[in-house]
Length: 288
Image (cartoon, rainbow, N blue to C red):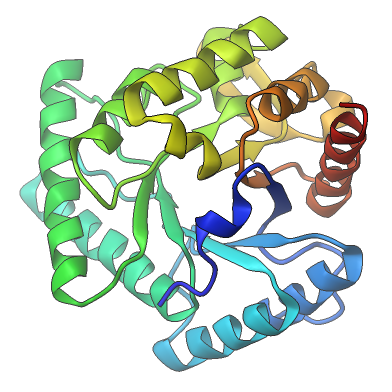
């Protein structure tokens, strides 16, 4: 049901917001899509982070608006799922939540649904990886049974307590079809206190290409924002101009790698900062 294929995005980055732009006249997702078009942005991540608030019918209306205004859609599943929960009932509930977010997102034409896979809790990283991988496989199979082609996109984490190092996420995505990464560069920076230079950004892109293949660089799904962090990682998102995040060097790396895909801005000033990112990206491309 995805209306926009990533083959259209090769060597091109689209820019959008994590949810309905703050300056939107009106409050619906359709209102937000229209406003994104007015602003000159290209994408929206539908935020199901508290609940899956669309139905099949309202999701179809969202997809129709996105096609009309040529807005690329993704979705973000609720934050509270944990595919490594200690209690079996919480695992079952998390799989059901992820499935519903993906299934409803597919009716809107979303290409992928982003989610935080879980926490290590009392398990080793290796055991956590095995449990999360098996549970993702179950959700993927259920989506295939429902004839949904939407991709599942586990996201890199911003805290050492949370599952989702770059290697873990790329490993999950290399293990099966229908699973693609969400690389949150602000999270990578907050997690390590590093990954904030051109050389470090290119090393990430090199690793993506090595593990997932060159085609993956044309289908990137990225999160970018300013970030406030401490010894335990991510604390909160910040506007770009209030953070040390080196977004010009990231954009330069993406241009040099001929990368394509989508950047979703999660800044508190998300549409303003998405336009900052788009403007800087186009400037860098024009200087080649």
